[in-house]
Image (tube, rainbow, N blue to C red; front, side):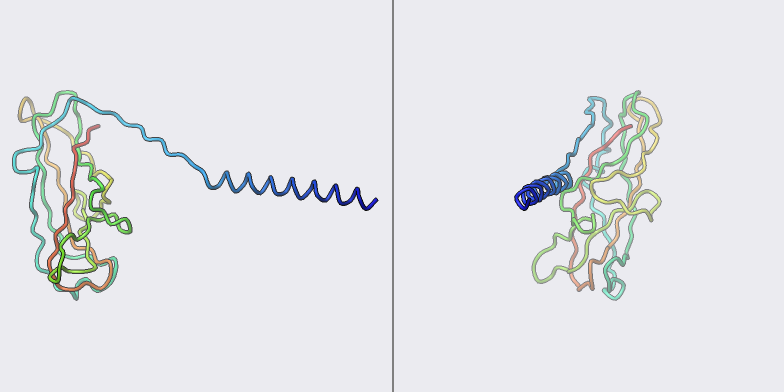
Amino acid sequence: MNKQVIHISAAALLATAVGFASIANAASQGQVTFNGELTNDTCAIKAGDDNKVITLGKIPTNALTASGRTAGSQMFTIGVDNCPTGTTTVTAHWETTNMNPDTGNARNQATGTGAATNVDVQLLDRDGTTPLRLGSRGVAVAVSGTGTTRGATLNYGGQYYATGATTAGTVTAVARFTLAYN
């Protein structure tokens, strides 16, 4: 009788172990599928708007004393023209190059003893208040006009974003974009 109990208990333990293993495997595996579309029909970035330099003002460090504080916002535009007739809206897709993974903002790339610390540059959408993480798009803007003037003006902003108590120094951040269409 004791032998039967031991065999039943061993079988129950084995079944329980297999059940736990399948639960562990199910929770530790996943999949990401990327879908998209490439197009030959594109707008052109207006001359001078493909490599803009935006100057954020001199802001005192006491305005950026804790993580999440912002200051010094500055708006800018990106003009596009020569849009094909079938293109109805356009926006900038902000690439993840130089992204701080904790904030989604552009890292300060200034280096050396003269570089400010604990500061990123945060992008803002067209309203000047909605943050845009690198890797996302702003609000799409309607394309209008005809011929070479068929296009749109995209409005964005940038501002200092504290990742901690900032220190004085220079800030240089780069945010790359690609035009995206609907």
